[in-house]
Image: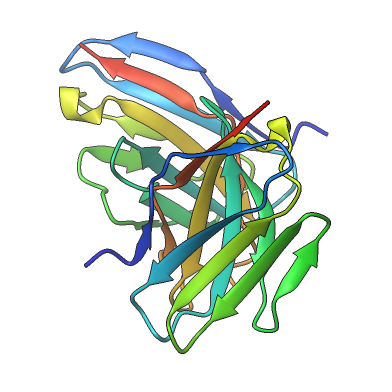
Length: 113
Length: 111
């Protein structure tokens, strides 16, 4: 049971570059989420998706783009990376948006030099 | 004011001790509450949901106090493997963008 997987696990890139973080889930969950986790902050929602082709902004969407052409995939793209986007990124999914908890991938550590 | 606030700790306790964490939330209309556990450099994992009547799972007990707007997590008979950061998570209302995470409370269980 693969669950939810993220790739790459680690990425180092330079400011101004485009970088895409991948997220894949095998549960057929409707909802998928992208969070970033930084010291002194709880996880903050970047973007989320309720279903294929439906995405919406979270708390901190600036500088990020997402797509959801298939239910199982939810890539996150930094179009022009900045140092402030250095963070740990977590993808999550849930069956519905009622009171169901979210299940997280194992994260991508991204460093922007 | 933050939606969810936790004491960051660290809490250093000996094996076998009982330890309790509190978490306060600001939105009185909050609907759902969870405790997640996060090990160093790993993803958060659901520990338990918190129900209005309180709930217990083995050595772990979660309580909700709506009047004072806090939730608590009690760990009895602490094990070395309980060392982790515990995240308080609150869902304020319907909608996928209404789940808020605390910054976490760090627990270290000492032999």
